[in-house]
Image (cartoon, rainbow, N blue to C red):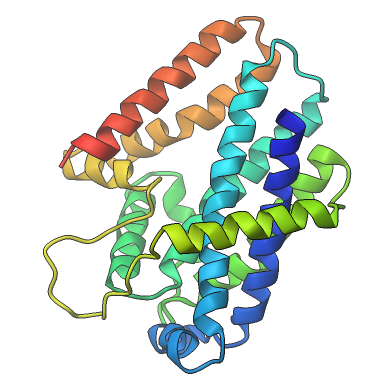
Length: 267
């Protein structure tokens, strides 16, 4: 089962990359929201490929989390330390990719999430020096765009290659991954784009970022939030080297439960 999940995860990655390449040439950071609407309504099959990219990326992330869970359930780790560490690097790249993709839709939700992220970065002593890597004062979405289509996909592809030693995937797996994506498109709805400047009661964020926003609303210091968010990655790294694997998994489970509570139940 673990191998099947890992192959489907890789297949969904390919669907996400290919569908993203199809729509990327219609996207312009200087007119970001207009570009998205052009993809939705003017470009033939543009909305289909945008949905394909969105749902394949979401499914890829979910299958990746399931893959990690299955690896943690095993009693033994059958990969090298470098392969394990590259997998953590890839996991981090996926989270940033998903967040940057959310921001690039350039609606009111996207700009709000970006501003919250900027606040968490600029008010944290070490991270504030990284802010220029993402914030562009002339074209707001430009650096998010470059990270999303160039740097992060390269980092993720390299991490996957070092983790599994190949990027080859059978056509059968690709077909199943494509089918999972299309089924998701039928069953679920993609979030609506909110026109910038429109008055709304609440804003939405990526599902994995909601907890961080709630903690910020509860007056947690940005440094505390960033340290809290780094805990699962730290525990995953430690897990490979420590002999107290049950304790490490228990701490990770507690973090997941608490962050889920914060995301779902806190206002």
